Length: 81
Image (cartoon, rainbow, N blue to C red; front, top):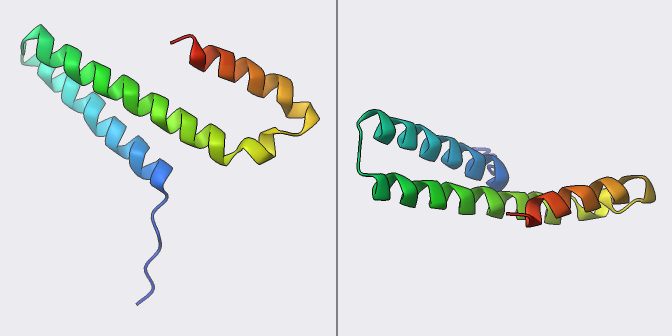
């Protein structure tokens, strides 16, 4: 049996999608604000982690001179938060 190894970044993005769907449901159900805020913070942290992972894995590709300026702009945007 040949099992494909699942891409960890794709898995993380799928999990984040589930978290966001859960937050939308919590909002619709008028759950307490603090519960929603905790989940929003968790999603924000997850997105930051995925962004870091993507940038780390693509650093060699993005390190060419033509992409370096673009990479620096993206990093500055990510670090604002």
